[in-house]
Length: 399
Figure (cartoon, rainbow, N blue to C red):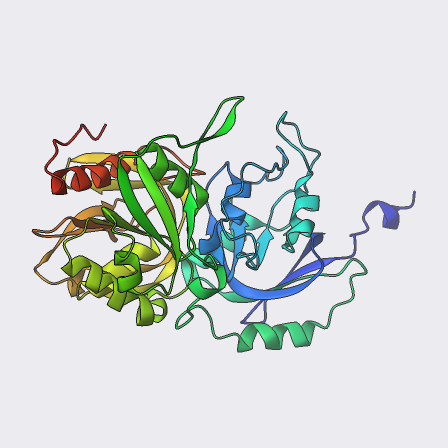
C-alpha cells in the first residue's frame, strides 16, 4: 500500500446541501435520490425507529446528536405511523457513525435496509456536533439530502433546490399523513415478550382527531379505558358529535398550526362550546390555543428529543418529557380565559394550557413517549377524570 492509498478519502456518496450553499459530504445509506426539507436535531439516545416513523417529522431531515444509531436494528413493532398508506413523513436522516449489524434479539432487519424500504435517504460520516451547533446558532436551515452510490451529483442544482424551498411556515402537512377514513382502535400497550394486546372493556367513548397521530397515543387511550374512534383531520364538528363522544382528543402532527387551523380551528371551537372534555398534544395543543384566541410562532431551533424538563404549575412537579415541535404557542397572545399550566425549563416557552371553567386542556410535549420517559402518562388519567366528572363520577388518582 502506498502512502497515497493509506490517506485516500472515499468518494462521497451522499450530500447534505444547505440553503446558504454549504455542502456537507458523507456516505449514503437507505434510499437513493434526493429530498428537500428542514434540518432539525434530535437529542434522544434511543428510539430512532419510533422517531423516524413519527408523522410529526413530515417535511424534516432529522439529525441525531447521539453518534451510534441503528445498532439495535429495526422490527415491525416499533412503528408509530398509523396511516401506513401515507408517504413517509420524515425526508431524511443525518448520522455520525456508519450503521453496524444489529445486536438485539428483537431485530428483524438492518437499519439501512429498513430506511431503503421506507424510502428514507440517509447520510453518515457527518460531524453532527458541528451541524447541531450551527442550528443552535443560526436556526433550522432548509436543505436537500441526496444519495447517489456512484457519487455523481449536480451540486449547483441541489443548491438551487434547497434555496428555493419555502420552508414549513404556511404548510399544512396534516392532510398528507392523516387517516383516510374513520376507524376504531383497540390495540393496547406493549408488554415484555407478549407484544401488543387487545382492548376487552371500555368506560369512555373518545373520538381522536388524526392530524398525524402516533400509535402509542391510541394505545394509552385504550389502556385508560377509552373506546377510541379515529377520524381524519378535516372531519367537521357535527360528524364528531354524531359519535356521541365523552371526550375528544386532538393529536400531534406536522407543519404550521396556523395553516392546518384553517379547517381545524372551527371544528375545535364548536367542540369546546359543547363543554365536551378536550385533550390536545403538540399540534393539537397549538391549534387549541388558536381556537381559544391565541397565536403560534415559528421557533429558532425547535424542541426535539426525550430529555426536555417541563414544570407543571398545577402540581409543582418537574417532569422529563419527549418533544417534537418547531412551532410554539405565544403565551403573550393568550386571553385571560386561558391559564398556562406547563412551561419548558430549557427556554421558558409555553408547554401547556387549560381553559378556565371548562374541561379543556393541552400540552406541547408527547406524554405517550415512544421514545422517551413515562413521566407524563398521568395526563391520560387527567383526561379520563374530566370525563368521569362530567358523568358525575368520582375522580381517580392521576399517579
